[in-house]
Amino acid sequence: MKTISDWLASPWRRSTAAVLAGALPVLAFPQPSLWWFAYVALVPWIALIRTAPTGKRALYDGWWGGFGFMLAMHHWLLPNLHVFTFVISALLGALWAPWGWLVRRFLAPSSPSPGRVAAALVVLPSGWLMVELVRSWQGLGGPWGVLGSSQWQVEPALRLASVGGVWLISFLVVTVNVAVAVLVTVRASRVPAVAGLTATAVATSAAWVWSPRPDVQERVRIAVVQPGVIQGGPDGPDRRFDREEQLTRELAGEDVDLIVWGESSVGFDLGERPDLARRLAALSRETGVNILVNVDARRSDKPGIYKSSILIGPNGPTGARYDKMRLVPFGEYIPMRSMLGWATSVGRAADEDRRRGTQQVVMDAGHGLRVGPMVCFESAFSDMSRNLADDGAEVLIAQSATSTFQQSWAPEQHASLAALRAAETGRPMVHATLTGVSAVYGPSGQRIGAWLGTSASTSAVYEVPLSGGVTPYVRFGDWVAHAALLIMAAWCAGEGIRTLRPRFRRPAPEPHVPPVRTTHEWPARPGR
Image (cartoon, rainbow, N blue to C red; front, side, top):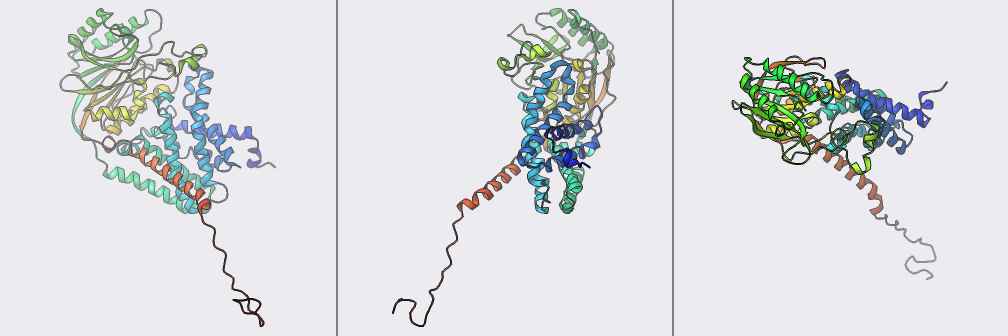
């Protein structure tokens, strides 16, 4: 009878198993939202890697598992990028190859010592965090699918986010996975594994007890306008504007403090279409409040296409404008277009690169309310929301459009990110979309009101609590990431010293052997 080890002896079978094991964590994210599964989702992958016969094979297991994770997390891109989705997943999956080598290095089948297991509980989560940090670079697609963001609806995890950001959640989730994997596969080292689980529980409890709670001072009423799916065509942008205008007019008399439209809610430059600017100004006068729209168009005052958050008052544009800074790779620009421009021939990649803004903006939305706008997947970047909170924003706003991926997991995944950003900064966040999912979260990351789903074409008013104070994450920034980097640097230095020590060790002197005495010779002068 063949054992599992025999079955995995085939490189292709082993690679297939790694892909499947790496894909498991996606079940913890929306739409399935099995948040609890994140704490054991890495166990099969870790158990597979530790049985790798060589370090090279462990590198492959890490790479294939990373490919499975990236492909599962971004599977909804397939209708748009087609085969290029596999290329991107393979390139990003390679980031997990060194992590696979680390897993085998610490948890190899030869019964690792308790000390090595204890080190693994710190080094392996740090190595995972290095992978997340590298792939979070905007040029590589940004921090979509960071493991810690799967805990967006778990109150203790959101409290951790206020202390160390989503990075602290990722670190502790990986620690739990490593500890459980040790309990399952290395029973001789149960003590450090249990100690790791206990330390994680203590850290979470400490954050729960001692981390500052947001101090709610007052409430504002913010309305979200979601027009729903509007069929394309030459007149599509005009029909969308008409629907948004109709929904906004229904808010007259609702006594709101701000109205927010979604990303690309206005498809024409307002300088080129003064008629639209006049209609928006009339809406502001009718509702008695400013309106934050998003213009996706070629600008009349400078070359190129921009996505811009623009605040409209009773007299038209107020002058407050934010141009999107971080663009979606392939969706809004093609990295290294001279080399990768062929992506336009196999999918719906950007035919023309959008232009980038140069700085973030905090706007005075009226009545003293200061808001910090972001556009689309900028809500995935912790540093952007932290900078806005540090600059005085009282409400964070993300204007988004996920209509391209309407029947996928993408809208729910995107909407969930705002909960993490709210908890990290202690500031409420409004996630307003064209076609859903629109959502609002309080300063602790708790959901306010109901989501506006992908089938809704409506407007909704939310009572949004404002809070003062500064969270530890806003104050100290990405200290968890820095600590993980120091841990990896210390481990690498230690490995280097252990490797080089034998080369520089002086050979031991030969032992002194006293001369042999005889009855006929003296030891000092032989022959006498």
